[in-house]
Length: 195
Image (cartoon, rainbow, N blue to C red; front, top):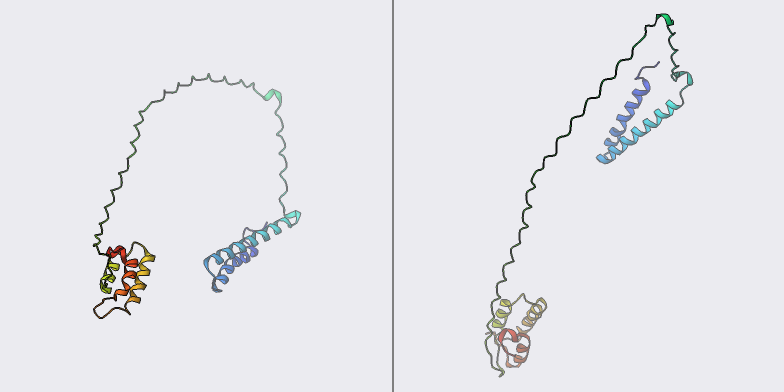
């Protein structure tokens, strides 16, 4: 009978160690190294199964033969064996009654606090402007547009472009010609209170 470890076992061990080392030297990541080691192990298992299956019949252990019964002793030598009396069954102890424990009342579900009331928005005081045509100051219009920006992004963009356009027509003091009164009232009326 061969020993447990032989040359084949040594070759398989070297193979199992060499495969991950070669993959590591090739610069592969940990997942590839583990996968290659698993594949190598499966190949060794398949090889061992094939070797075990194809080994010669003589090497396989012989099936165990049933043992021959011992010869019976002569009848005169046997002493009569009296059967032992069966022990009387012991009465089983009665189980203790279950102990009832009081279950505490469930905790009340907390009621969420109502959200705080929103703060009232500051009221915008719009000055009263007469309906007669007038000159408007571009710098005042820019200041009012900045102060009230953020409510409507599209409107803010339109006003920004319009203010850039009006700079070409404003005087050094920022005053626009009276011809722009209608345009200013249409575009900035909610800021200056002139509709």
